[in-house]
Length: 78
Image (cartoon, rainbow, N blue to C red):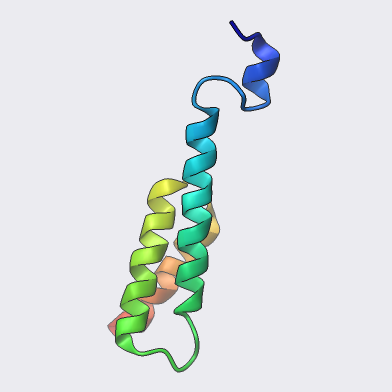
């Protein structure tokens, strides 16, 4: 049985799951950023939008993911 110290450092129950979610979120975010170039096509913006949505779902507490997703929504609507 682990003590409180293990839980605080993320080694307790769910720590590995949280790390996996954060890793997936960061990977999706980076993929989304790759599709946000100035001369991107609508299809590239829609793909980036999906990646940013995946990032938001995996780590809903990161405001930057929402910000970039909103930028994609604007570009797709143009």
